[in-house]
Amino acid sequence: MNTVRLLALMLVIALPMWFGSCKKDGTEAVMPTNTSVEGNYKVSAIKVDPKIEGFDDILPLYSLLLGNTCLTDITISFKSNGTITTDYPPSCQSAGDDISDATGIDSDSKWALNGSKLTITDENGTQTAYDATFNGGNMQLKWQEDDGDASGKTFKQTYIMELKRL
Image: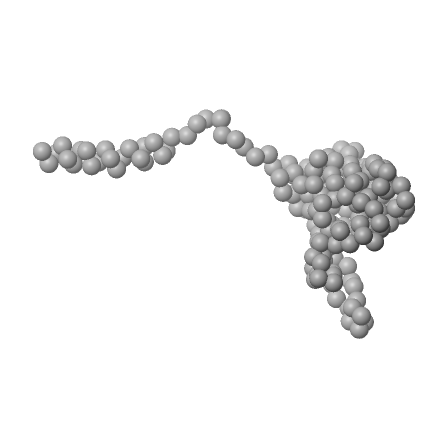
């Protein structure tokens, strides 16, 4: 009788391990991790560190200052040939050059990715290098600029522009 109990106990212990080691071949859902720059994007956030007037995302401030929603309406297209195009939604028609000033990207820009460094060259030849990271196909562009407070003290301001893939 002890042998039967021992076998039953071993079976009870072994069954969960046996079934737990089973896996389905090729039927698991795999989340795509698109780390390609090419694609169409919308600006979803422009984060800053340190905060500006208590705001860590200044995209709503741009919309308020510009008096329109152009920055969130515009579609930025990174083409496979290294060029960038932007559409021209109605909300951008009165915005002028403020859009390229806010994003560093104009409709005649060119892009190049080297490792995690994305360099964007605007129509005037000005180059801006960003640290590019990808998350679920979305892209974050990070850069730093020298800034100053009201007392004239200078500091580094970090910006992260979040681009949501369409």
